[in-house]
Length: 192
Ligand SMILES: Cc1cc2nc3c(=O)[nH]c(=O)nc-3n(C[C@H](O)[C@H](O)[C@H](O)COP(=O)(O)O)c2cc1C
Image (tube, rainbow, N blue to C red; front, side, top):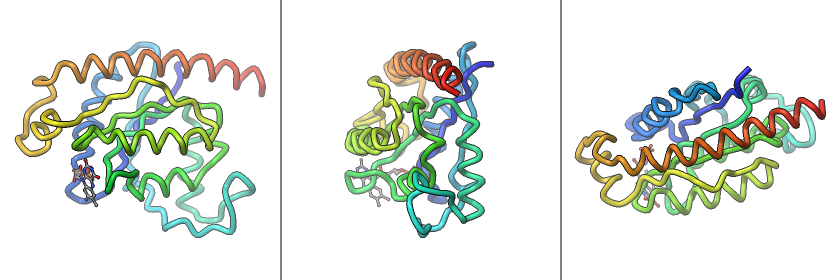
């Protein structure tokens, strides 16, 4: 079975832009024969701000939405986080969702599609630190939709076809993600 990759939309705002880059990367990724992808919308997992007794790394979580979230993550072999940047950091809703699981992330790869003035570079670098603590492998190549590309897509309703270099960046990122997803899936299965 192909590694299963979840594409997580890191914003839940009613008027979010995040749908656009998520659909775009899903369209590109879906052409790969060696990986399977699904879009994961955090709106479908309305988690409260973290209020469990302790970290999910230490024991089971009680919240039923969080249990459903963890069950979804458990069936995945890797992730693409489609992330905005809020005040030079990670969106609270995405960080909260990451805090709500632990072992479901361990030894799985994670890649990033960031969007914003600087392509969410600061948020992505912060996410790499979080990913290290979750024992994930963050792949080097990312897609940063920034500057005029972001403005064109966000404010002027341009299509991704105007910015072919973004698809090139996506191809490089997906190549790395595929390698790590395969290697880590095999290793996890061997160790089990
Ligand atoms: C609370 C807040 C803080 C923001 N801070 C930044 C920022 O630090 N850097 C940036 O590039 N854009 C920033 N923006 C603008 C976002 O890039 C833009 O609103 C984008 O659409 C947010 O993604 P979303 O619509 O998917 O939620 C901010 C937006 C919000 C709502």
